[in-house]
Image 1 (tube, rainbow, N blue to C red):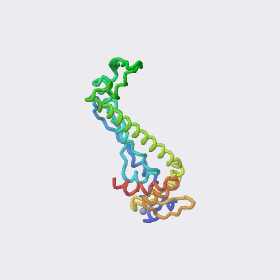
Image 2 (image 1 turned 180 degrees about the vertical axis):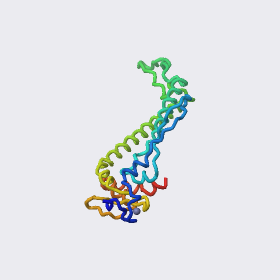
Image 3 (image 1 turned 90 degrees about the vertical axis):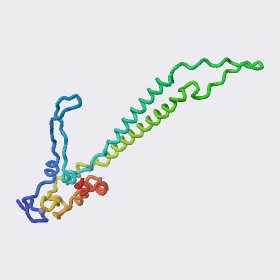
Image 4 (image 1 turned 30 degrees about the horizontal axis):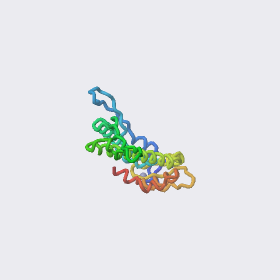
Length: 222
Ligand SMILES: [Zn+2]
């Protein structure tokens, strides 16, 4: 029975551990008591992940949503400049009374429309309208980008259960730093590097090309 847990690299079983156990064991929820902004004590729980756990992940890291902060910032700028312009520039005040219609040789001529902007913001805050418009555009672009990223990730990792099936048959040797499969038809017991293991597992889930982009060894170095 011990044969099944023997590392094919070093031939010993004392440092061999199932991949899911290593993965989950390296993801600890650490709770600490901290003072919040109002000065009240509260319990904060964070997930601390070791490099090894990250290297053994059955699927890629979800895309970063940090750029969403830029989107929120852009919305704040858009609203701020819009309000600033509207209040400071009195954009929505009644337009001045149109000029008297001009009568010329029997035709009743309507006064020409004032040129664009003449009745709008005074020139000193007109630029705020542009900033507001650009910030709004930037916010729309950022949120579109985030949505598409999330949709792409969900589509890519649709086969994650297949990857996890293979992944859960992996055994990691802490002495050799290698993984081998046990009882998987079509897979031998050859020791695999973390990157080779990642490539097999991720390819099984249908996102094998991502293993080349997010390398397991790079994850270790983080
Ligand atoms: Zn070993």
